[in-house]
Image (cartoon, rainbow over all chains, first blue to last red; front, side, top):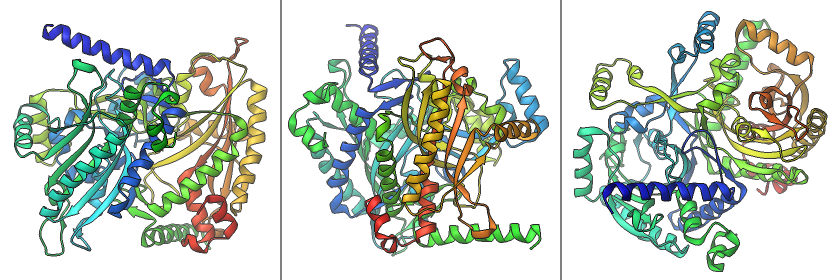
Length: 311
Length: 311
């Protein structure tokens, strides 16, 4: 096949999977690509998966923290997200003026004109990755050489797509290590293996591949090659569209080194900048990978998998 | 006390409650007022409460749907939210231009200037109430005379505050009736009583009061008086700050009549515009009301309440 027909075939496969999920009632369409309602069955799978991940992580004795889907703009500004991933960001604004400006806004809207000009930046942005709000809460010296956090919540990526594996708003479960440079590297390596084994136990055909973040633009291409060269990010992928695609990441294990810990002034008791690493699971993506692998009717899934997921 | 000193005393009581929650580690502060991390203990209470509400609603045989914290801007535009509650809205924008504009944005940011001007409106807004995304999915003729939906998820209100009872981003569990006018009114009345009894069973000193939505501005004041006159919204309140405040709403029962169903073209099988009503629980507010009522140490709560919540 030529490149064009291969790409068309992949788009067709994505559309077909999306329609199957909608027809089965597992996802409920909205008017925005990548924004869906989830059915009770979808949530039962996701909840079962979450219990498996929580059991997996029990030896970590992690401190659980839950953050909402928005976080402070002041903290967002301390990261380089708007430099590296401007196209994925979700910046929030609201109306902070008076009656007169509100009448003007409504007048513009009535005439079918843009009305965003009457809004002001809010003090929050959409949480891009659920570990980002964590770092600001750790500013200063850590109470011990290292600590592991269990974070769960909604992430946002502005990338409208008809591929059901690519949502704009999705849940992530992350287990984040903050501590010494050596500890961060070891944690990444150990928990990459554990994550792979856990997902494989659910019958998912997992491959671990060196990966990069989707840095923006011309300057971003250099960051991509550096990240790949240093082997900092490993993704766990599952084939979703057969030979048409190399597989979709459902989880990843990353060594961030001092990238965010330096930005938020997080130090180990010996005064050095802390290093961080994490293992992160895409909850919707993994749920969809289970549905793609075992079929859309949960009753026909392998008994062992249903047992593990409590289904 | 004069009005000013009463207001000062109330603000002091709110700050004190906030500090107690932070000191106990139940909430984790961020740099934005009304945006917090939640501890494992906080989440255990909230999860237990959610199980109680799910049991309460079992006779409804509700269809469960879960929506993410953002929903389509096109659907938001079909409601009158930006007319009625502009100050509470959360409108999302992102970067959709190229390398050159991105360099300009980063240059402005480097100089400490505003950089929002380089962003474009995204196709989503923050979900203001978790039932709003539902209505767009019901457009057309209902399959039966009436149906009840169980929706749970994050709502957003742009109202930064140091009162821990007033969060910007919070979870809601709503049970929404869509059907006939008479059915909507009866549902509201019946489930107001059930909700009140359920919350009272958890030891909360509940009062039901006629209430209004916080409509914006001069025009909004007329909407407030109409809503109160027709007794459409009833809030279930709990005293949080003693005599300093009349009590904070933790749940409400509302008859929306055809307000949103007309906007989304939802009809009953006989061709009439459907009516809607709902009973809605603020998950964080109810959790905080439990902590305020029974104390910050869950181990000392009444055994019966702990039993019901599975704590």
